[in-house]
Every structure is written in C-alpha cells, then in structure tokens.
Amino acid sequence: MSEISELRPTEILLSEAQIQKRVAELALDIRHDFPDDLHVIAVLKGAFIFLSDLIRHIPGHVSLDFMAVSSYAKGTTTSGEVRLLKDLDTALSGRNVVIVEDIVDTGLTLTYLQDILLNRNPKVLRTACLLSKPSRRQIDVKVEYVGFTIEDRFVVGYGLDYAERYRNLAHIAVLG
Ligand code: IMP
Image (cartoon, rainbow, N blue to C red; front, side, top):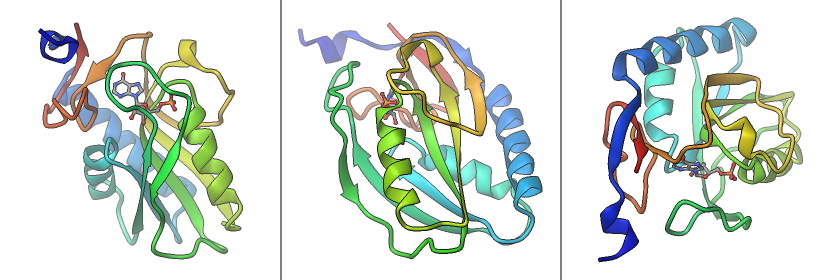
C-alpha cells in the first residue's frame, strides 16, 4: 500500500466553531486597519475556504484577486522550491493589499510571494494566515494577522490538503 492511502485525518485540532469565531475576529481586525481601500489576494488552492469565510465577515467594500503557487508536490515535506502557477489579474500600485494564506510553515512560499508583490508598489502590504507553525520556520517572514499558532504537525481540512484530499472538511484535523 502506498503512503498516501495509509495517512488519514485523526484528532480534531480546531473545530468548525473555533475556526469560525477566529476568522470573524481577523476580518474585523483587517477592516479596522483598512477602513476604506482593501484589496485581498488569496493564495490558491489552500486559502480558498479561509478567504470565502473571511471576506463575508468584512463589512463594506473589498476587492479580490488570486495567485496560485506550488510549494509541495505530494507528501508532507517541502521541496523548498516555489513556482508561480497563476499571476494576478490587476495592478497593486497604491493599494492596501492583504495576502491571505492558509498556513505558514517554513516561510519560503510567503517570502517568495511578499517579494513579488512588494515589487508592484502597493501602498501597504500585509499578510493574514489562518495557521502558523513557528517551530518550522526557515525564514523569518512577517505575518500581521495569524489565526492560530500550532505545533509541528501536518494538518488537513478547511482548504488544506494532503495529496489533494480532505480540503472539504469543515474542521482542521491532524494527519496520522
Ligand atoms: P512553506 O513555504 O513551507 O511555509 O509552506 C507553505 C505551504 O505548504 C502552505 O501554503 C501549504 O500549502 C503547505 N503546507 C505546509 N504545512 C502544511 C500542513 O500542515 N498541511 C497542509 N499543507 C501544508
């Protein structure tokens, strides 16, 4: 049997209710910091559920764009290599931009994205991530809005996958 078929979601790390409460708080923090112009960039695919819940809790106008990067092939270890698979549709010049990421692990993906986006002259660039694993960091990347800080465990659900599985779970579970 392959490794992929043996690993499954085990204990629930964050329940649906815990996630929803925290996402609503993050949304209000972001709106508070950017009451007028706010442009949100979600990183596909992992951030799509976080994004959709987050923006529904942000009152007023918010514009959206998407990027896609690949940092993991299959399995639970990073290759350290980041590839841009889909670029933005709109310019960032003079905008208040918030990157929305699912999880910051080594920090390589986010550092790569922040470098690319800073070169496009946004007025402000900040980052929101649902989860952060600080013990895994290889680069000291700045994240202004963190949903939950977690231990070094591979997690799935709420948009996060293992070999394209389990993104549709409403909670976040440890893979084991
Ligand atoms: P980093 O470049 O090592 O920070 O990795 C960031 C990306 O790795 C995330 O956007 C996820 O796609 C993936 N990743 C890291 N840790 C996990 C995890 O525990 N579960 C699922 N995906 C993860």
